[in-house]
Image 1 (cartoon, rainbow, N blue to C red):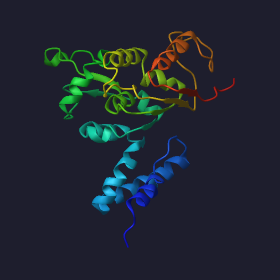
Image 2 (cartoon, rainbow, N blue to C red):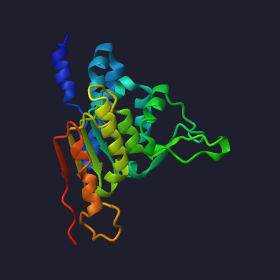
Image 3 (cartoon, rainbow, N blue to C red):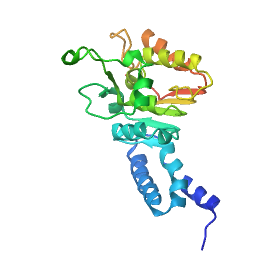
Length: 240
């Protein structure tokens, strides 16, 4: 019996992974990812219908592997609309496009990274001062996936690490130059959420835990300038 594609598509979208970092969400997502991957192997029709569902929402504990896969397949990266990043991937740095990298990155990514001088690493003295890039895994994912509309970061202290103020300024400047073009990180972002907050580490390291200091408030002004942003939500700060 043939099932109409519209019905199949509706069923598959009910398998869309969820955002968030709770154990229940991660367990449910594991089942969803396994089911969608099985659909990719089942038939050409299911592959075509399941692919946009699978890549719509990225919420994984192995973000670097996913980011590399998406970098090598930019048509898949363009389908990502929701991204949930754990605290580790906001703080953990990767070396990109330099002699210590050991990865083969596509040429377009070399060109795209050149727009973000704040990510440039120190010169590699062993090779005539050649520079690469050093950036958090979260930042790399956002540079690869430029159509993200919903971004969730775990931890207030992670936000300025994954999205430094300088990087936000570079994205805003690039967006002004290419206002109608794609491939500008954060240009499509509508919702920004920070969950499980602790503290924001701004320029003043003596601020009280649970408070927003001047540096943190200044950082928050940058996402507010993104062209399509509609909401910025921060979970309740802890009480001391």
